[in-house]
Length: 314
Ligand code: 13P
Ligand code: SF4
Image (cartoon, rainbow, N blue to C red):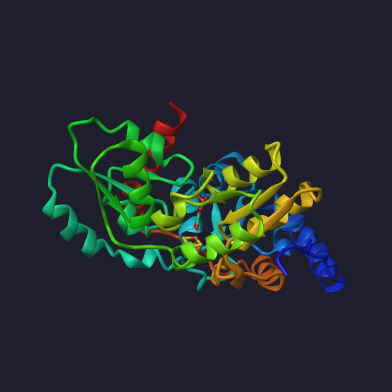
């Protein structure tokens, strides 16, 4: 099922033409995450991982930015580009991991470690970002952690799996919040072993949101776009993919001579998949579902996001 390249339907083609027309009429720019459905990836002005999405809106001169991703991604765009109108086609497309830590819980957690540097994965609310020292994504997390002075304790929120991976890779003692991504966390070692037995020659590429026992077996660990780049540019031809199903589309489209096997059929993010072409059209026609953040929170959240960008680019 997962190894067939998606074929656009006639209906998709009609809807995509309508989106192109409305986009030009509205001077809108569509930013798409790599977990989106193939027919949505095809209407992107830009497609990338969560870090690339955060930066891209700033570069566009469009006044309307449509974010085809989950709500924290749209919030991040607004925090960095408050003069733009940021719209999300499905306002209920939240990230369950981001909802596993509230601002109140973070205040209590921080109070237990008053001297620690607090690092938040971008998969968090704006309120949480406003309370931390620096943000990170899976593509820059190691670089961020490595810039924290050695004598400082590190609190990492909200992903226990990314926190554990960072602890292993950096050798630092990282105190993690116990949140997780339901999609990645449920990939089991048994499933991975079963697919490895079937394709013993395949390289295992995983996202660090997977559990430690799965990450420990990987040949490569990285963000969504890093996994795609690794598979496309490697000399190898067979890959087991330990991240959400959406990344298969760009890989299969660009290298149909290679074989890509999803590590688990559970690797579907339901909220990412709740965005449809019809919802994008509705959003372009009605300018509904605008994403905003209260100015005091936005300013503080922008500090931790800008700190991430500065450290990533240093
Ligand atoms: P990336 O930063 O790799 O795009 O990951 C975002 C995400 O939500 C992974 O589940
Ligand atoms: Fe959140 Fe997981 Fe979906 Fe990524 S895949 S948006 S972390 S629920």
